[in-house]
Image (cartoon, rainbow, N blue to C red; front, side):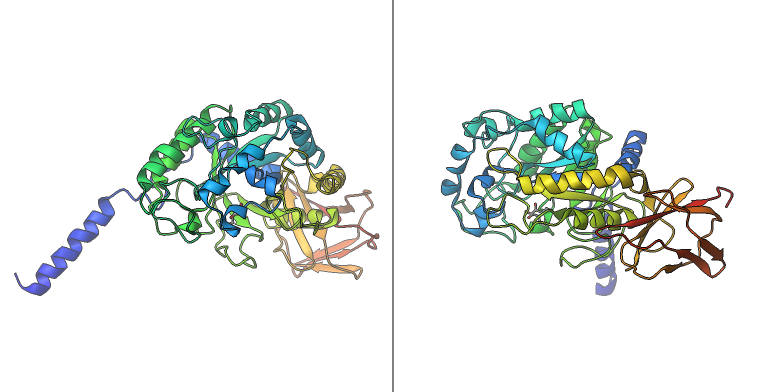
Length: 444
Ligand code: FHN
């Protein structure tokens, strides 16, 4: 056998090994979502608006959820923090009622962030709220019970990145010398620690909406045993959705594609992919001020109108909006957040028909606004248009009538092969969105 032939055989041999080995980095290769999971995806898309909550022992310092890293604290120093976390004002009923008043249909809360501190009763390690804080109780259990009572879906954010666990090794891009040894067993971290905690979250809290993963971007090339973890989640609760915030193209086994601080396909934040899945439900997340975790120096609140318009833009892009608040360490929610959220809820009580249960409409989103659709109604959301006539691209269905959503006032329109022209009512002051309902015939 000559050298060239020997070399080609060797290449073929390695290629075969790569094909035959289970690919644990890429996801759940043989994943077929169950009917319950597909149903959960549809319900998820119908909900449209969720509350994101970043809350942990870091909240005590009022300097965001990255304070451990940003101040380059050692593990020994950070270990003191749980002693000061005693959220005596935490009331699950108040939190869930606020989400409802805001018109939000689901809550996604940090079960643990990058500090690895479990905000729930975990038997896997005592680095958790029950064992280490004077509070000694499990707020996620109270929240889960209250969500079930009030009909709100609960999702658990779970950080795969861990700045505290010695077995998170080799460490990733966010590494600093915090006193951990330079060795550790990453396989054990994934298979025992992480999968152990995920099993707790998926068995002790009743039916949950899903797991929202974050932090894989710290070691993008590591083998995260995704196949195993995703299969475990889908086995324990087939309807639970896996929502990975890895900022990459979705992998098999993932049920939702999420975008951080950007509409799907946009990348102004600098870490999202521009690829948009046509199969999976979409979500974008953002903050109500500029921070995720409680930040005492951040008073840069978005107005209710800004949130409403962001929600409309998300819906027009066929996406949910997950809007974040960072509660105080004592468990109270900043009144500034509350006022804005309640105002959005009031707006939704009038305009919700054009948001909930819709999908992105037939006309591509543009600077003037977006469209959403539900059954035979197309909702034209005019966000940025000041002149009376609005010309839209052609749509296939025949429009039978058009009116203003807010007051049912009929709208004059023309429709032909070139498109649709609407005669808009004058904009009213402080109106975040002018919604025109086009009723279309179901025949075509
Ligand atoms: O590092 C985190 C950050 O603290 C926050 O949790 C956001 C939420 O999407 N995700 C990470 C950054 O991508």
